[in-house]
Image 1 (cartoon, rainbow, N blue to C red):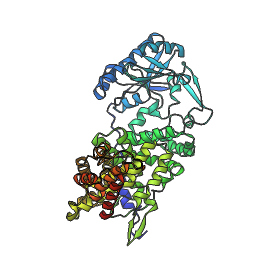
Image 2 (image 1 turned 90 degrees about the horizontal axis):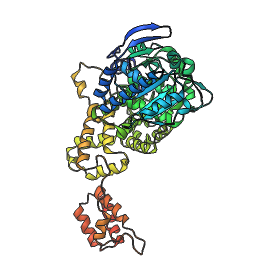
Image 3 (image 1 turned 30 degrees about the vertical axis):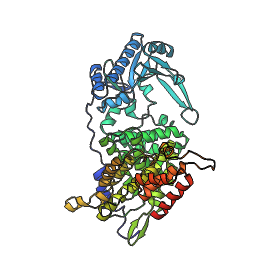
Image 4 (image 1 turned 120 degrees about the vertical axis):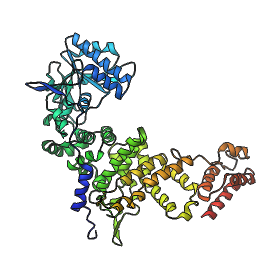
Length: 567
């Protein structure tokens, strides 16, 4: 690369690091008050039963509150039978973070499995899935699922998530049972009847200081998927891994290959969709060696330099981290969900995978011509590694292949007013068909994320920095403009409708197929091309078809001639 283009230079990286990645100190909305310290755990006072119920209803729904109240009634029934039932896992962690969870997992102490099942059956339908592992799944009439488990030990005896020997022990202590939890803040438990929170491994303090710390180093090793879970939590809660946890995760990186693609996919999707800053989780995966070990398509982004005038933020890896964060912000701002949100985040992660294979220095500048098209193959390869669904893969590959289009067509008409009125409807129609099953809506969100993933402005005191051409050249205005145009042309969320239908052809004297083996499906396809490539008006098409007098051969020849002349 040419002198002065080293994008790992200290000024850029230092400014960028301060601007985007440093997280403010934790600000827990309610740090539980410590009540007492017992030999093996600390007891804190969390929300009372009523306070918790009110929060769940305010944030989620009346149905969520009813589910929590059902949990409390189950806990009361367990207590009456001589046992004790505690909320465990995410619901307790989220309470400490000031988040109202609607997912409830209950762990029952002091009763045998048969007694627990007999009691819980009174509150809904019990599924046998997980019963062999000491877990009962209770579904109530409103559809809410509650996992009810017994304290147990999990011993690794083989590969995969089924390679465990499970021993249920209702007499285990709270602290002993919590050892099998992955991270200290997930080892918290709570008595929903009293509001007491039990913290055997200083998980509340780790949340306060934003530390990712394993609960038990030996048990943590049993499931390599916890590496991805750790990355997810880092991105969701703005954590940093403490040194011993980081070393342990680095040592485990090669073992991730034994995990099934379905489980890998679920954690990747959680990392991208649940994180406030997915970049932080991706950075952890990079730091512990998971990217180098398992995802060469992402590893290739590091050190792949970009033209500093367009990408002052750094190499393609840094740009990608910024784009996934921007994509997550767009999801929040636009209130996106489901397939659209998932596909946007996967496309944001993969959009520049073609740059390492196309970057070259021309006339003193770094250029990556064709990286959009070249990126499709590594995108498909990476998505296969993480177990992405085929439909999602096809969508993301299409978005990657076309991600430059909104900016290109927008600038084409903006900077050359003479072309503004010559922009054909066909350009949008052709793109919508190329994108299918992805949509122009998803493409415009990706273009905006790509734009927002550029920076930083190195001289914030210079007002001209706010007018850098990167702002409109990378898609903010382009995304909005393309959305407006696509909506007007009715191709925003779907591919264009057929220009002529089979029913119309029949009314014009054509038959679906004739003795010569001609089928009028060819007319339907060519009619779309005449609209999109030659700008043919519908009235002109109808006249052509009438003049063909029901002959597929004649109609096809006429339309082919029009397309040849249009070129």
